[in-house]
Image 1 (tube, one colour):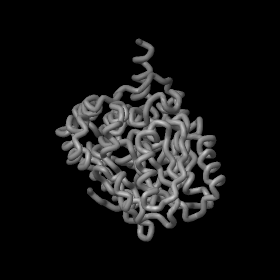
Image 2 (image 1 turned 60 degrees about the horizontal axis):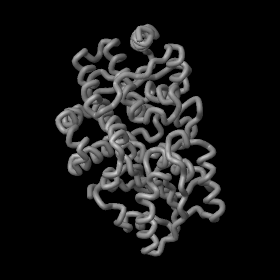
Image 3 (image 1 turned 180 degrees about the vertical axis):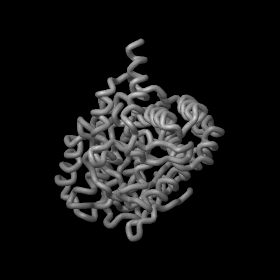
Amino acid sequence: MLTTQVGLGDRAYPIYIGKALLSRTELVGRHLLQKRVVVVTNETIGPVYLPALSAALRGIGVEVLEVLLPDGEAFKTWETLNRIFDALMAARCERKTTLIALGGGVIGDITGFAAATYLRGVPFIQIPTTLLAQVDSSVGGKTAINHPLGKNMIGAFYQPAAVIADLDTLDTLPDRELSAGLAEVIKYGLLGDAPFFEWLEQNLDRLLARDKDALSYAVERCCRNKADIVEKDERETGLRALLNLGHTFGHAIEAALGFGTWLHGEGVAAGMVLAAETSRALGHLTDADVARVRRILERARLPVDPPHLPIAQWLDLMGHDKKVEGGRLRFVLMHAIGDAYVDAAVPPAVLEQVLGRRETVAAAD
């Protein structure tokens, strides 16, 4: 087992990474304020991992309440959030009752938001079961639900007590979900870790084959990179925005098609290509750089071309992005591979060049 930490003073917490961690109940037990937990999961993950986790916790004297939610990004809503609150209220859960998020990014985000707001804050633990959640969404304390006009627009910064990333849960992950997680893995190389990007180019096939040593290395490297940024900028006032590379375009794709039509990582992948093309149009990246970005995403079995949307729709949807400041769109772009920056002054002509070319292709089709 590897252990790293998000260092936030008295709110610091560990990230445990390894195999067979769900059976190690001491990892959960050491972070409980009372021997009572609420495990929130979904209808896909629950039947696979919930019985063993609940039985193990009950075996050490922990009372377990189970909340089963529908599966999918389309259910990351107020209505689903209220199902968690209903269960907490009915069971008269207290401030020392710990919520456990057992699932992917949707479960982690919605459970974290419930924990942040129920009784104005109760503890929670992340047990991410997808690659995307293990390398990204479970770490850093971003919690949220979606609004029809924008992804993750309603939420709170609220840190977990611990993150337990059991690599064995990736054995049951569908290939499409594994690829979606690889988009976020690749993102870390592009935004600030060029040596890791080169390692990914050399080892991507091992990750696709679910080699545990390669996965362990990649998950720990991503978590350490994210922790370093979160420690410096917990509430995204500056540096943390770099973690949104590809997301301004990607979130627009998700909203345009309907949440859940494209997986989050798929939107991010196409968004990173658009970010690379925008960076090239501004004179930063070369054709060869853009080709490297496209090539590794294609190898990861991810979409590299966005759906065809009118420029006006792109701009409208991106206008709901969380990084909008003073009414101006802010994009995460790249000076070079491994060197990202935030740009609030992308000329409209450049956006029209990048997005308009897509529109022209659509018309030709």
